[in-house]
Length: 216
Picture 1 (spheres, rainbow, N blue to C red):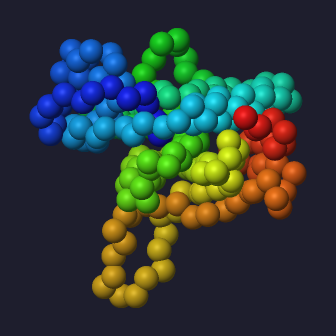
Picture 2 (picture 1 turned 30 degrees about the vertical axis):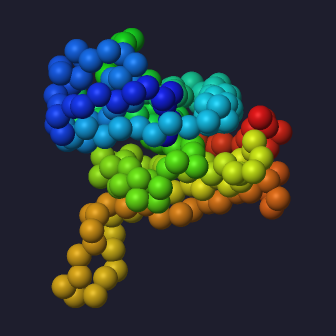
Picture 3 (picture 1 turned 135 degrees about the vertical axis):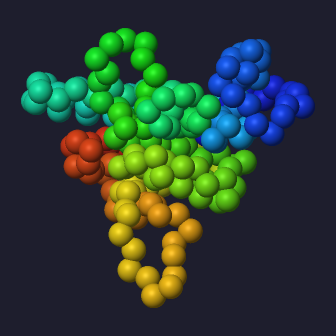
């Protein structure tokens, strides 16, 4: 969840996708639209982009290995690609740091939330818990089944922890109590360099990434 720093102009609170397209590219790429509301992305350090790329490479390798064993399956791994919510329109979207999606039938198509299996964020020091709670809720409400968060060490250029979440819509709450978000994520996996050899999980397909592949 990062983007290079560019001075932000005064903009309306809400924009359409068509209005966003009229802005300079260096401004537009810093913005997500949440049901039309302008949400600015925060700037991250160089490590942010590096670890995003390393995760992309690791996930891509796992996807290709599994597709070799199961030719009927087809997945693509992307970085910083817009996910549009709803079946039409483009004024409601988020831009995760990395994602896994089903292959689309034609090239250069917009990626809809229904196509996405996993979305992930590399957290930068500037990201607040409020920021991440809100964005994680957007992914859950959009129906994306798996979500990852990558935490970096503040004092060293390395990953401190990777957490994997599964989408959940069932809630056991007292009578009369309603969840703030009808869909949310539950933690299903957590890995740190000190307690594991790497990432090992079988969803959305078998993923095995050693820590040596995720070094800065």
